[in-house]
Length: 449
Ligand code: UGA
Image (cartoon, rainbow, N blue to C red; front, side):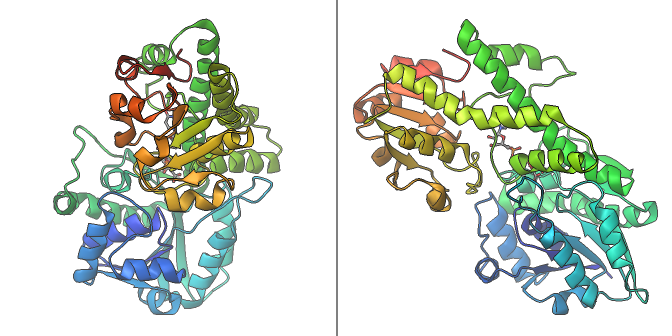
């Protein structure tokens, strides 16, 4: 008989994980304590935008393999495996807040059956697993195995990333890790059937690597992967500033640099910097957990500083082109932290809009999916537009802050007619410059012109 699974937390990691396990034939309890999120899932909808996920939720509810609940007491006693996928927001000092991680373990502990495997998917500082193992060992009459199996999916491509992962990492006892690996292999076996329901195109030539490691190594693989990607972006942004001063084109530069297979082109796109629920907090989390061990990871402090500087740098660049920002009518397109998601946490587009507004500009903003999510973080006085046309009408300059296809493929002749000025600031370096200039508009990117 197929195993029964509990997934704790229906967030950006937990929900795709639960749905894919359910679609692979496992009875999967999805424990979510937020009533709004739970109700949405029960109606077959995710609380965030992610391509394909609603269709999979709906199907797994129909087959009764996915059981959304707010009750640990209902789910945990029946579970052979428990995936913990709760949030790890950062504290004001940059250290990760692990209260949800420990609460999920404590709460599970109350109801675990005699034997179960607890799998940590939340991103935690190295050493956290050892502390949780101590906590789980308190129940001497039960046997709970603990492994770390960090998640590498990206928002916006969560389903495809989970079905075709670059690697699966499981840290802990090898015998236990093999059992957990069996769950991932079963998702892999079912993936053609799963994608046929949502029409996601499968990537070709994409082998998955499997790493069974120690607990601490698994935790550190996850945090180091995100830190290194953040580092690459900040490196590209540092070189972009130099390119701006020297007339080089950062895209050409990084194309040239990135074709060295030792480096790779990925995550070398300069622009308004990284945002979201992962990179900013994982970088500050790494710095603070290293500090606890007396290790100073200066390289990550520098990466974070460069990232923080980018929205202001872009505003200053526009100010030079426009003489002044005061009284200018400006549109920021893109409030999600990247295309393909409605997530607006730590969004560079929001930061940029706020800086422009603080400098006296009249700012309108628009995002196809994240207007609502962005609202609370936008300065008062910024106008949230419910259409792209409304956002750009009568503006002196437009800033592209997220590479949504509808922004990249804009009809710039029409844009010119709607604007009163002519400056297009490509804060993603994603536009076709010729399409902009041929329409009679002025183009500027980051590290290019
Ligand atoms: C990131 C990692 O890529 C995932 O592997 C990881 O599982 C996830 O964090 C997590 O820890 O949960 P995600 O935050 O969804 O995924 O988004 P990314 O696609 O990595 O983008 C992060 C930010 O970097 C975005 O704001 C994006 O616009 C920016 N970025 C990305 C750049 O500025 N330049 C680039 O070249 C690439």
